[in-house]
Image (spheres, rainbow, N blue to C red):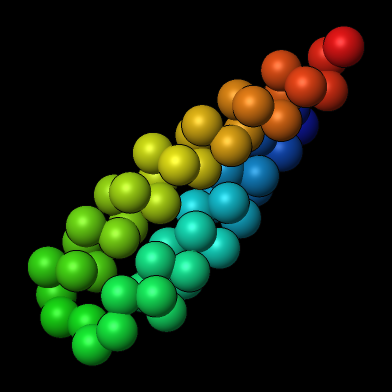
Length: 58
């Protein structure tokens, strides 16, 4: 259970940081850009978590 909460918190942290970065770099933001940024942030967060786990297991 603790492992799942840790993974969820890490994913949420990555997602928040990457979505914020997307929104900051895109300029003027409307609803569609928020949705695309959130989706791209989620995909990138999953990739970042996977890459960190792969590098940490060595």
